[in-house]
Image 1: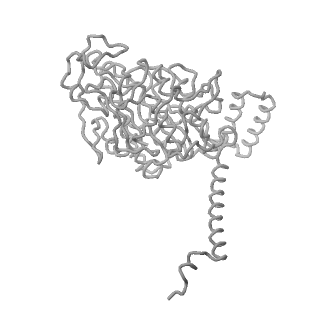
Image 2: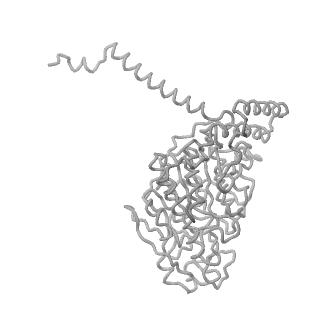
Image 3: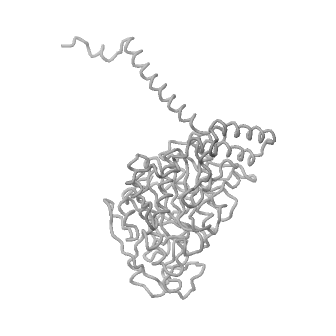
Length: 475
């Protein structure tokens, strides 16, 4: 039996005190070494990793941009009343709406899609997305989104930059301005465009605007080789290429003038390109992925091959420290996007078949690798589609109420936020503007929308322009 009194057990002796103290000090030292190693792997200079304003739950973002405007009425927002009113004029009690092409005498168009409840949450999802439906408990659907514009270019600018005109930084550029990069051998912000062509707002919607040039995106090439010339030329060693890059840097720096951010950014791209050649080629090679992973994303099968490849590449990028990745679905002329003016069924069935399996694969792959907790996945387009018919079977652009969703990055899935009215015309319950989406994204990254600012033309500019609200129900 112990003869130690309660008092003697509660007061540590000198030896125990030093043992416990140095155990704590060694833990602190280990944490410091690990953090030093992480920072040493990251780039120096403007893209060095920076502390967030608060403890963020997400470290990176993947934006699945459904360009052209996917219909909420065919995807995540079932409207039985709209189906019952099919072919009738819109009842006056729902108010007016401003469209780009629809005439005032247009008739309502019911949806041919069927909706079923999925997961433990019982959220209704369209039959267009059977694979995504199986991930719905990880997804928070915001059914009450709205924005200010009904034309593609202005709405795309507002979605990406918070403004309806070009010249302002995108949310990707703001993200790396606030947090820097965690990778020394990869770009910090990547855009993967659709191979079918450009969008109405063009490349300016993705760019750094008035932020320094270091915060611009890297635009990947469409197709199977997103970056050319990653391999060293035959007969050239890494040491020889290093000497060439050092010479080019010295020559460039000899003519660099103070304050020339664009030239300084161009100099840094040579260094990044060298590191990509020597350290990162395997990241762009999908042949080292398991056959089961390729099959999960629908790679080497149509119609999922292209978007599947880009979603898998997005996973590999965030896994290796890339901060923001935008994976675009839709490009080129209108019907090649989610822009279903003529036939909503043909357009959305085709686009969903291209993207449903790859998107679900991305969520499942991130989750099984332990990356979903730190990667915020955002899905949506620049607006939704109208309850009224255009050209008999199509739907026009619609900005008054539509759906987007988030998953991962600390988002509490299996939830619905807000609602549109019974015909899907207008957000009526918990309306969420694009600036609320932006604010929530920044919040999950640990960034305060008001502190993340940059002086421009006498004003402290920020992503949200007018102050947004964090969607607290899902954070």
